[in-house]
Image (tube, rainbow, N blue to C red):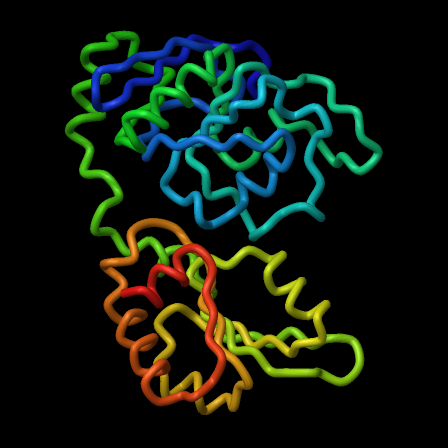
Length: 266
């Protein structure tokens, strides 16, 4: 496990560079630079499949103070490639904590970077937009790292949903008799979405992203849900075609969140 911070370099494709220290992980990772302004919820952010392929900057200055617990995971593993912080807490204080954030990042091979002016980085990304970036603990030449960020192919045009969707269909039952049966397309769905549907009395059948309209309707749902997920919706031609077919033929309530909502719009 990493015990001492090491120099780290962040380079954006527009030539902007930030220097900080690595507190977890090692090496070099590419990703799309984004930010999150939440004061809490860093574990949920790390494990949200919607962040697959991204480098997440936390604007709140002190991250990790309440540690990590498996109960707060939104999926089976982190999907963020690097977590960028102003300061990372070394000594969490929370009776629910199973481990500290640094230990968790190390365990899952996620780069943890601190010592960054995350609000300056956030303002830059807010103005210029999410862009290709790279985080490195092995390259000290800023110009060389900028060139690598520019050369990276990026996430546009990639079907990330198939990288994070479930492998097979599964069912989650509510307590007592179900009020409705919802078929949920998993494009990178957070666990809490299923949990809330079940709390509302729904029987939820979660299906892989590539499930067809006919396969979904064979499950005899009362409603269709299209989940959140990572990346660009445009490469998901199979999901767009399925949504169009369901809209045209199913005569059922349909709703989507995040990526699922974008798919409905296409």
